[in-house]
Length: 250
Image (cartoon, rainbow, N blue to C red; front, side, top):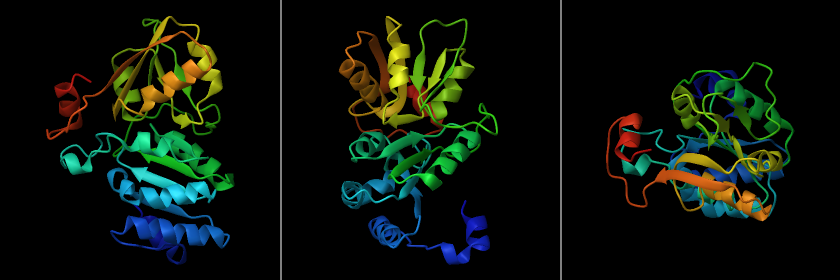
């Protein structure tokens, strides 16, 4: 995926190999020297470098983490490649912004934002191509987008790949593409409902639903959050992404 970048900008590309901890250290050094580093790796393997990410966040080092393979993106590769708890980990990094991307234009907008940002940013990417719901000039500022659907009154809050699956089912979908910092405008919007659904390819502890419940609770809102998450067990099943989700009633 980075072949074109490497070919066009060889002096701006550093390959650290299968060494995620050292990659973060190299990026921190470059950032402290005034560069704007972006680090790229598979989502499940960034957790190997969590201590380095934690220390970088504590010191406010503005690196951008491009974490590819959110949730069950690597279906077919087995349990070592499922990123089922990474969102919970990323949310604990102090002073960071955490994104999950559902389309190419949304990714482009977040990329533009990252160039000017002085914060650590985590951008969780899906694998493969997805339908485009955002215009070429979309600006990712609010942290979410509400795709209203007249046939379903109660909204379904989700992100990434599941935005597409829930829209295909005809649901009223909210793409919560930035879960940290949580969009306060969304808190006010959801407070108008008696209950909302939250669907995610993460374990329940610390995931998207947790972020939603915390935001609503902290604001004193009484909206009930109905969560659908991965079961709290080791996932050894294999198959396509949709087969895995169907097997877990997700």
